[in-house]
Image 1 (tube, rainbow, N blue to C red):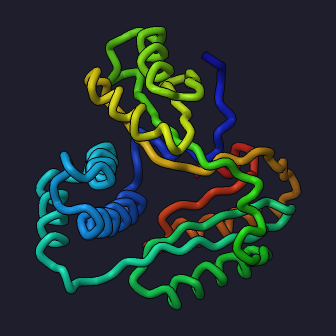
Image 2: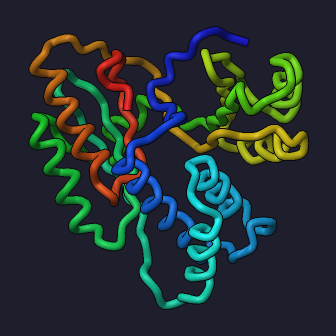
Length: 247
């Protein structure tokens, strides 16, 4: 087991303000709709939906809200179609940024993303211009307060199931998998009744960029704040290291 992780993109939070929570609920509601349309309304037969439901519960979304979202998506075959898009570019200081969106209006979303880069003195790029700098990984977070076993027990469960690594943070254990092994590791945790605080396929930078210039930091914060404020933006990944960028 390694020591402190340098993952800049772990989104596990103990608390969230109302605005952030509202945005998270909006995105999760859209993810529920997409998962139901792709695989049906039964989480036991739809792993993607089961993942979204687990994510919803980890973010304290009420059970009745989750159930309403599933029922609405199941009965609304001609309803809103949400489309996934990915945008790539550079922030000031050469920081690589990837933006994943889930939207019913791609033109609006593209305009908003472009404006965020522009306002922060960044540049939108073409598909693939920065994605090669990131590795796709499964990332599962276990809250130490919710887990009653030992670190060795947890390590044995996840490594036997195919996990690549497990790192111990101050409050959490962070499990890393290849995307192909992500489902198997999650199911192994479920079989052992080990509570999962958050789980997702994420993008981890291969290298980080250290930025200290105040104007550059300001520009990066403008871009990230505008992106995080958009209800159409699902995930933002970047390779900026430093305490200023923890979001």
